[in-house]
Length: 311
Image 1 (cartoon, rainbow, N blue to C red):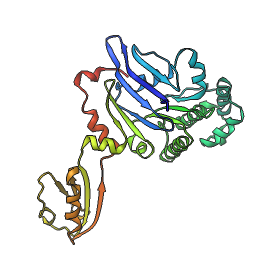
Image 2 (image 1 turned 90 degrees about the vertical axis):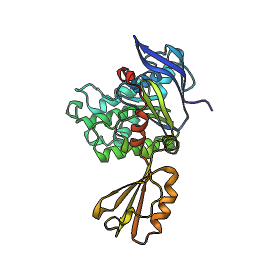
Image 3 (image 1 turned 30 degrees about the horizontal axis):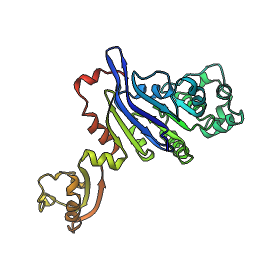
Image 4 (image 1 turned 120 degrees about the vertical axis):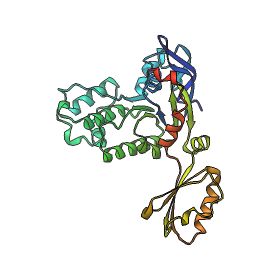
């Protein structure tokens, strides 16, 4: 099956600076890919290349079966939705008027307007002027315009900016629903704890280069970060220190709140056997590295000179 997004050794320069450096990327239909990286990592440049706003200096970009510029561009625009980090609308128009305007531009039936306003929780404010909207409301209106026409590809740049926890959860449930319908989603976010349950893979960029890419299991296997095991029970004094034969296992006593062990991946089973065999242990919680831990680990691979590369 032809990838929805296909980068082949894509390089993009800005003067003497390298924004994207020989990037290979393949994203399949119905996949949610998180695009992660510090400011200047190349996330925005990657999205602009997909949108056809800029062209690569070397390599090739294919989106939905064709180059995002040229004859394929008009077809692509109707099959693609985009939510930028900082949305901007005509303040004097109402939310409904803004969405109706974008529907005409995208040649989408007007009937979708009210449906999408309901979907993003703006029905009650649909006839208010956008200048009265909070930042979170503007963000939800931006999501509604991105969803016009049931796009096959959705690009979301910091989509939960300004959203409260409940709205953030609703947003990611919308992303999950889109994926289930076959929509491909590429999202960039700095708020990693909310992203992890909803993505299929993550691409971590640094200095325009791919530092790591894969699903959570693949990233954990590559990183080999220690697991955290939290044990609770009647482990008084130094009792929990006895019987460990692996010097790599580190422990921190939280007194009444239990003991936290940092355990290498290859020692996980031995550590669990040791703890479950101790009658003083009443509860065990196993915490694998989170997406935030993995992001921090792989981002440390950036060379010092790469910190000056712009996004």
